[in-house]
Length: 173
Figure 1 (cartoon, rainbow, N blue to C red):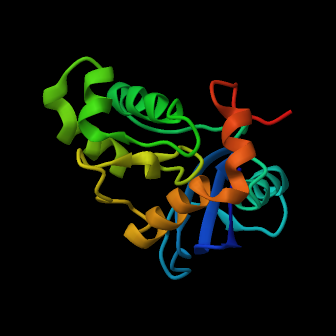
Figure 2: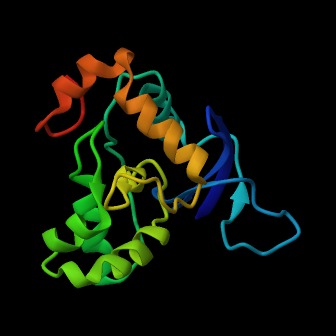
């Protein structure tokens, strides 16, 4: 069964969507109720674990997520999203560096295109990918959101979490 729910985050309202209990989308805004957006019915329950982990993340107590997810995408998109998920909390990587990690420096634009199709903002941390000179470029939730997330992850209040999560499986003990 497809369900969705809108939640309030420090970045504004985002929508969570799942199908058969597998999270498949987390995006900014609220879907237009007059449109058949394919997200199923609106619910109040069913996303407790996602909301709990998001609250932990924004409180500075979680560096990455451990959720049942079903992301739709091409093989290349999945490779890009997996590589992005390996960027440590509080650190960044350029589009070109990511393309090199994937085997072809010339695919930086393709990497950017794959990132723009990330269905799980924040959860798959595409905000950690920056321009080659560290510039904040493209982010589906907006540059201000990207800046907020990077500043949050680099803040003094998350310093211990950065150390704890460096090289770890991601979920704090």
